[in-house]
Length: 114
Image (cartoon, rainbow, N blue to C red; front, top):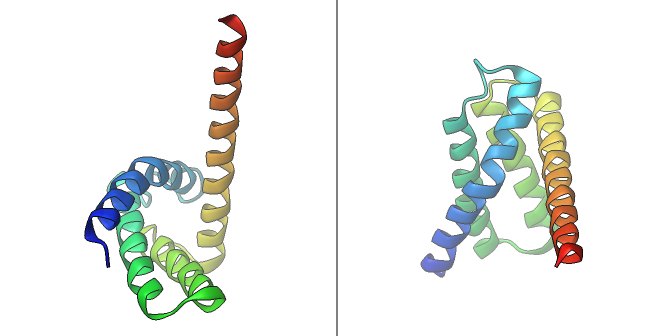
């Protein structure tokens, strides 16, 4: 296992994914249950467990296991049910996609100004 790559993945994942999870969690379960530190723990544990599972299991089986692990982490840290954890994950992906589109439009707009 490449520990430097894992550390970089944890740092980048925390910076990018944790805020999306936190925003989605606050929107769906409230600010009392969805704390930013919990979102950070979800990301860190999800990445580390993903690396460990990826070493021992590969392919589609590993992807399915990791999907369940991420849902379990969201369920556990945000104190919600499985359906709500799935909804939080979906909303976090949608928030991420909207931010990426907005940032790309801003970047494209800046290119036309130059």
